[in-house]
Length: 206
Image 1 (cartoon, rainbow, N blue to C red):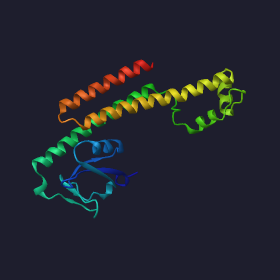
Image 2 (cartoon, rainbow, N blue to C red):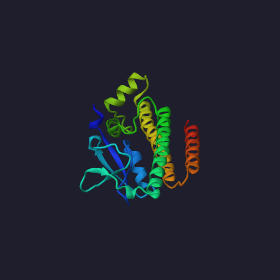
Image 3 (cartoon, one colour):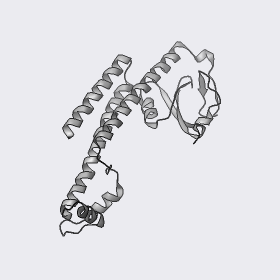
Image 4 (cartoon, helix red, strand yellow):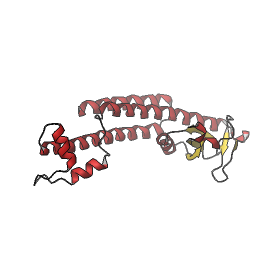
């Protein structure tokens, strides 16, 4: 697929309509807008960009992207652009760190959002010993009785879901903190604290 056919997000300065960043990740775009930098984002196709000029203006109502009025490229505007770029860098680092942690802790297959498996477990009645074919087959393959197989699958769904929820909670906490940082030193401290928290939570869950 050509890059020109892919979508992207423009991160725009409210006061000037100047495009501060172009970001492909909807997660990063969302948390940038949540920061205290007075931004908004719009989803557009990459081919929407007619120029690659250093400073561009996005009009969310008329559509065309045009060169930003040079009079608006003030030191204040450039500082907002610098901060947005810095925040994006650290949000990306945080996201990658959390995603790596998930890949190390989630089991062979992620069952937390497996609607089919969850529905099959819900149909079982352990009181009368009624189990769905999914549970019966899983138990047969693993040479265990069906009640034990059912308990194992329930635990698999629950533990996988808890790992993902814990990971999201950590990402959300520190992404919000990043949004309130005003210096790179503060951003570095947030990342270090996030990495420490992820390690502690991983050790506790093992």
